[in-house]
Length: 250
Image 1 (cartoon, rainbow, N blue to C red):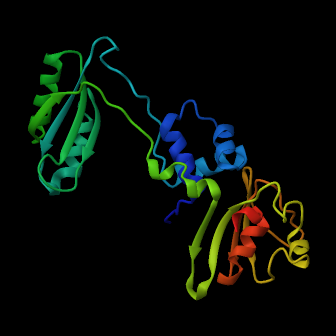
Image 2 (cartoon, helix red, strand yellow):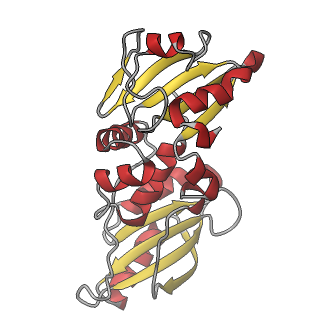
């Protein structure tokens, strides 16, 4: 089943891409305005859906016993690309294989060797598989940065954890992180409707609280930091935001 990223997910991915080892759930939680449990829950979901595929160490192999890192830019038939990519991964010393969609040099192989003789061994192994090496070169340096569109923006700062999905008929499903000073904080859903904080047609579908996803009912009390999934009509959007975020976000 397709998993749709919201603002919380994007900020978590951005933080982990920056430095997964030194970025803790509490640190991300403080930046995103949710609880650490919610962050851990979201990371688990991103991993389960294959969006976060893993965490790897960035190694300077030249400093590690003076090893050489070499990039082989190769040509392979499109019909054989996936199979040859998997076979290339089995060659000792190969650490990364990238498949490109079209054109020449549609297979990039990154490998580490103890010396030039070792790199020639890898070249021969690739050729034996039927992979044509078009060009190769030693890698001097490689850097990585987080994907900027997933990071903080002015819009994200003013609405830090709000994501709307439009439905037929003008309805919208929103994910909203409840603020401590929001009008609805500390009230039950039934009380919020009675006080006019929520319209009777607004339907709270789910509440994500720490490591749990709660099924809401009338006596459920809304807490600061809850991630609320709510269905509302188009005309009720501002009222819904005001209930969960306060008047500064309407």
